[in-house]
Length: 430
Image (tube, rainbow, N blue to C red; front, side, top):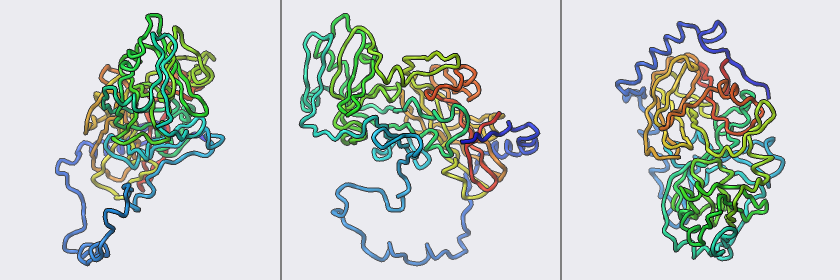
């Protein structure tokens, strides 16, 4: 697909100085009064003055939907895929509708999926987890055995290493669901992995783990013992209910802050060894090909990142001029998000956004920036900074350091071009 290139605002081909100043003044007056335009009360509106069907007739009772479902008017809020990204449905990807969500928690039915061999359908009564290798006593656990361990509840983001991967060479996919939608954020209930390993007894020579999935692809990744003993969980619930089948039911590994490929689903075995295994998914895949042809390996941690979800190509401005809310999400595998800056002029000027909701380590953060839109074109960007000082780079800074050969770990700043009619598209600014 052709790259959409926009010259940086302030050049002859970009925004004029006058427009930039106007936009800056509009942003600076960020809703001190909080006033929102509404239809004058003196104008009769039959939708409020007349009885509607939902006022007139009784609705369904509690037995109509034993498992609650969204309103029929939210039927477009679904995961979506891109047909040309995967060859078949057994090795496939779909994307979280970030532009339709708010807050920090992703509903279970909207968490993106990544399959390497399709969804394994497993009866939990028949499922087993083996611990073997460099341990004092190899063990096999049933699901009932696992649920007897002390459990914890933790909110973490899960991001595929290939999230935003199609953007390395330029703007490709028109919508934040497709550019950034391989991420979700839920509360996991599970057992600290260290408890299970300690039950088996870890030998001093054990330096690595090899978690393995029960799906047809037998997904495996090498995991350092230090991470395993730190904050990894063996989880069996998400957002309070059982894991969904596509998310690894009945049990999965949670590796906070690290790339999603390591969060082995349908977890059936953990082998301990003295060296990494160099499996397919950490050699030919999930390594970062550099400009010189060499590959970075073991790039586990997901870098500081953010994206504006509204306005965006799938969520245009429809209300016209006036009070406008810019919102988005930010996250970092290194810990909490300290600050998010927003620019409406393509990075010429930055304003500090408001982070609202829980601020948790290795979790998504929600940010807002409120301003008065005067109808002029916007170049929306967000830039996240985490608690250890990592700053989200521009795409050009990232490419200067890593080239354009990789499809992994792209955390570059995203730009949405909002036009005077409120529509938006994916662009890059040079």
